[in-house]
Image 1 (cartoon, protein in one colour):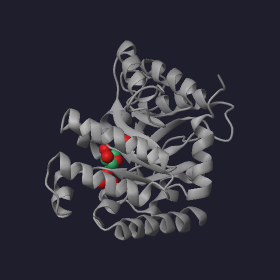
Image 2 (cartoon, rainbow, N blue to C red):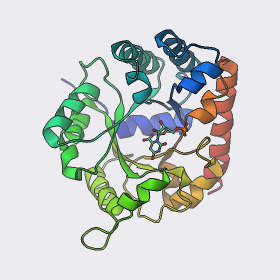
Image 3 (tube, helix red, strand yellow):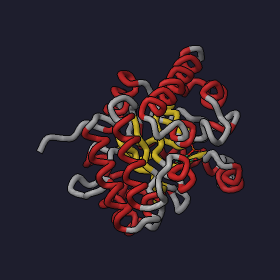
Image 4 (tube, helix red, strand yellow):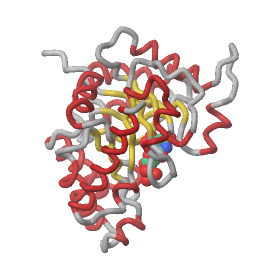
Length: 280
Ligand SMILES: O=C(O)c1cc(=O)[nH]c(=O)n1[C@@H]1O[C@H](COP(=O)(O)O)[C@@H](O)[C@H]1O
C-alpha cells in the first residue's frame, strides 16, 4: 500500500492555493431559526448542505462542530457523515471539531472513529484535548500518521476560563500550555513543509505569550462572534503567523441562507486575513 500524503503537506498546499481560512459549520438552534428553518433534522440537513455547497469548493478547511449534530442523535450523525464526504469530495479539508480527550485505550476508539479510512466519519483531522496528559493522545497521533491525517491539540483556547488551567505553572516553570506546545514541536520535528500536529490557539488572546514555533499549523478560532478580527492575528502569533489557520463560524454563517451571502462573507474574511498577515 502506498503511504498517504501527510496532512501537513496537504494543508500547506490548500493554504497556498485557497488561502488559509477555515469556516466552522456550527448549526446553532438560533441560526436555524434565523435562516427560516426548523430546529429539527430536516433543518439541520438543509443548513449543512447549504454551507457545504457554498464553501467547500473554495475554503481550505471546513470545521463541522460535532456537538451540534450529536444533539439530534443518530440522524444528526448521518447528516454529519454526509457533510464530511461531500466537503472532502469538493476539495475542502475537513477538520472534525470533536475535542476528544480520554485515557489512551479509549482515545484509540476515538482515533478509529475519525482517523481510520474505513470509518463513516473519516476526516482529514480532528480536535483533541491534551489535558489528560499529552501521552494519552498517542493512539490518535499514531493513527493520524497512518491515515495521512492531522490532530489539532488544544493549547490556549479562546475562552477566558481556559487560562486557569492552561496558564498554570507546570513542573519546570513552564505554563501547562507551553508543555503541550513543546510536545507538539517534538512530534513535528523535521517535517516538511509543515508537521501534521496542530495547536489550537485563540485569536482572542491579544498576545499568546507562548513559544508557538511548533512547525505545525495553528488553528485560530475566536474571529467574528467572539470579538477577534483578522487584524489581531500578527499580535497574537508573531513570527508564527504564516502557519495560522484563522477560523470563523457564526461570523460567516449569519450571512446565510443565501449562498452568495456566505461566499461574500468568507471572501471578506479571507481578504482581511491576507491584508493582516501579508502586512505582518
Ligand atoms: O477547537 C476549536 O475550534 C475551538 C477552540 C477554541 O479555543 N475556541 C473555540 O471557539 N473553538 C470552536 O470554534 C468555534 C467558534 O465559533 P464562532 O465563535 O461562532 O466563530 C466553535 O465551534 C468552538 O467550539
